[in-house]
Length: 240
Image 1 (tube, helix red, strand yellow):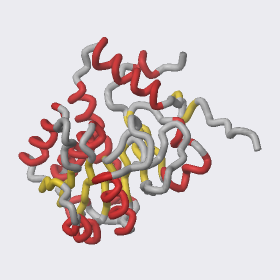
Image 2 (spheres, helix red, strand yellow; image 1 turned 90 degrees about the vertical axis):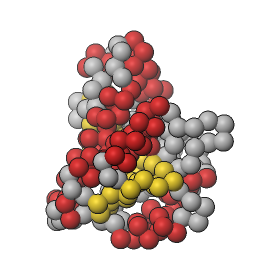
Image 3 (cartoon, one colour; image 1 turned 90 degrees about the horizontal axis):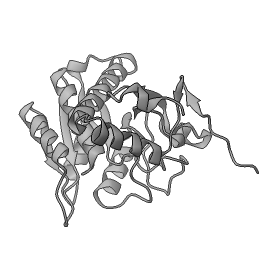
Image 4 (cartoon, helix red, strand yellow; image 1 turned 180 degrees about the horizontal axis):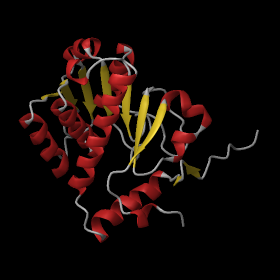
């Protein structure tokens, strides 16, 4: 059987690998001076808007009456999730964010720390994931929607630790999931998974769609694919 050829464009946007997206991100921040926090803020706002649209159009509920749970990793994808949680809270939703504990060797990055502060100041209940995760189970069962902000396109391999626990609990709860950039556990370039993964109702790709999101076998995990403009200059996003 021949190798599946993935499309080079989606809705007029070029489809990129994780490496190519990482280079776009690096150039935007390092060469063009766009603050990483600004990109994260735009990402969070876009994800919150898509979550709100889903709540209203698919669940037929008002955002102000909805409950949402954000499951956030310790990296930048988690920072995006914290920003999304804050924006949903500001729209009137009840929001709780569960965050993976910092690693033993290093804490959270500066942008994640700032979004932890902003989310808490906005009234989002932010909790570090405990060993048993009983509270997370209870919260997810009572939520209308979950936000998958665990593993971005910089991650590969089988999820472990807190990320694995939160993926399993989200999937067990059976609530609609909005994934940030890519459903956690899917490989950004191939769309394959290693057994622990999120099946999303909506995936909000940041900047450009990633190759793995368009793989035929990944469609059942990606759900409805949206691409959010988070402030990258067009010169970095164009073909060629």
